[in-house]
Length: 592
Image (cartoon, rainbow, N blue to C red; front, side, top):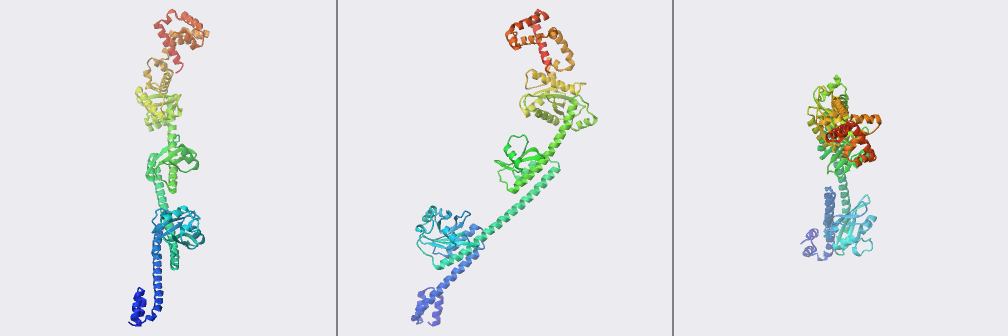
């Protein structure tokens, strides 16, 4: 062996024993100690070279990772590779409240420790964050240099960690996280490990900050894409709705399109709807859509007029742009509803004018006849006069229901007298009376009297309507609250409602109760009312007196005067029936 061989061995030998053999073979035993010094320096430099190579390789690798959680886990793994003597490596990230939470780890066994979060001002984290410097604690559980926190101490004890080194991750002198290297026995880190971890922490902090910034950029890009998509959807929705409105679409067609766009069930509430009243009122006050348990409500209005509400039933939470789209949609729908209401009201005015003209005895002019025919009603055809009345509910509701029914059946209708009337094509008064009664009662609920008068040329339409109206008044006087009749079905009572038979009624009343009527008129007595009450009370004097609020003797005297005027047989069955009928017809005639 030569000196050259010894020098080569000094550079390439893996351990001291191999070097010793080479030196002995070369006869250089006396230079072995000096050779060992050189060998140790070279070994240190080689180790340092490997560490730095690993450090920079790790730093380059971190720059390729953009997801924050991936970066944190990569930092923990690479730290463990750089300092393999550590039993565990973990990273705690600073939260907005100043606390630190473990987000990634290698070598930890405690599930609690992997998610532990230190309170602000406690643990090693508080001191490292305050000083911005690394900190090593020989025995964590016994240390009096930190503020202990029970949950953190328990997590360390569960994982049997004893010595802990913490290195700050800093950006612009602000601690954003801490890299920990811990052992399960007392072991101080070497100076090289200190320097290596601190250098690595600087790279790791930059990688973590880059990942955060990349995350913000990605979030901003996603938000921009979402906003662009929302704008495209809004423009598309506006174009589709505008096209529908211009093509004359109705509210139902527009709501169907809105349902498709927002992927939910859409319906329109009328202004008098009882549901969602508080949400509608709030939407009306603030001018925006209001979230409900089942979706969203947007008040509809135009020019101060309340037109109801747009209800979107969906389980999807709408974004702010989608909320604006919904509100814009509601504005378009409000204009459509307002326009349709204006058309309906104009149609209702024309329709009502034509009806009132016929019902009050007027004659339709040529242009009115054209208007009537344009609405499907033939003023020269046969039509039945129908009249409806009810004791409860708003008169306007009855008039609107009758008018709508008439329009949908090629007729004319509207408010009339004490109820609502209509002229409907046809000749069967009985069938129409029952048909109208069933339809209106289903819509309005409650008791409803409907009477119809069949066409009787040359009887004028206004006379037909009076006959139907008086027939309804007659049924009401008879105590009926829910009925459907034609005037023809009233039988004997038809004499009361038929103007052509008024002379017959007068002759019958004069022949039966004329003497009593004349006596009352001449002497101011009440014989007619007394006899009527007497018959109604079944001939009982005491009840008759109570009904008339007089003494029984007064009733006896009045009945004696009746006997003197009508004869002794006025209470016989035949005469009594005739008198009772006459008195009843007289009483009803005053009420129809």
